[in-house]
Amino acid sequence: MRQSHPTSPTRPGTKPPTPPFLDLSSAIATFQRDTAPLVREELGRLARDGQRPTQLFLACADSRLVTSMITSSRPGDLFTVRNVGNLVPPPPSPGPETVCDSVAAAIEYAVEVLRVTSITVCGHSGCGAMQALLNAAATAHPSGAAPTASGHPARPSPLTRWLRHGRPSLVRLDDAVTNGRPLIADRPVADDVERLCLLNVVQQLGHLMEHTCVSRRVAEGQLRLHGMYFHVAEARRDTSSTRRQGSSTPSCPTHPRTPDATPPPRPHPRPTPL
Ligand SMILES: [Zn+2]
Image 1 (spheres, rainbow, N blue to C red):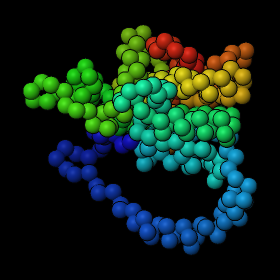
Image 2 (tube, helix red, strand yellow):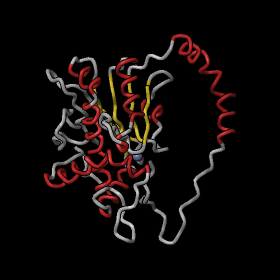
Image 3 (cartoon, rainbow, N blue to C red):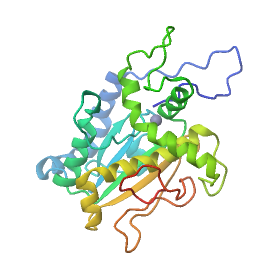
């Protein structure tokens, strides 16, 4: 999700340059002409044999995050879920505001049917969802909705309701600021948005572990969870390892551009943080 208030070198009072318009019809025609002949054999094999990805990749919907490019993956490699803020709702429970079956269904399918052996949650720099969470934390009514002129909360929009799954990451942010631990090994964190982007990956890995199918297969040693942070401006990603030796819980990246091992605040089974 593109940052809602991006910082840019544009001078005050001047409009940022208009981005080039993508003619999707033309782009698809180009694919048909130039690329399809090159991948037809491989896609034909996948169509015949079915998909057998070993990876579930869960990333933000931000247009700057091109999952196949940053992972050098090919058709059939990644079972991909994308949404605003790379959020993983905890398992659904009864109630109209807790129905978020889409991500849970994808997790269940990937883990139980496709039998993936790895799940990666990928956050990125300049995430507009994290910026929105920070903005809401500064202005919102305790219900999570922005107050109206009357002081009463407005009915939350779908986006506001969705972002509630990122609120626990805000708790992590408060804790991280308090304990002062560095989140990135080789440089200071740029600002609270980046800090929250990093901590949100850790939090969502915790949410993943609340899904029974995930925690069971992690405990069996059949599934590993990974955290990843992609810095857009530097075209740089970092991901690392996996389950700690002798542990039933997954660990996450511990090298540069990844959050550190700050314990999460939520009282549920959780991975060792990034
Ligand atoms: Zn984003």
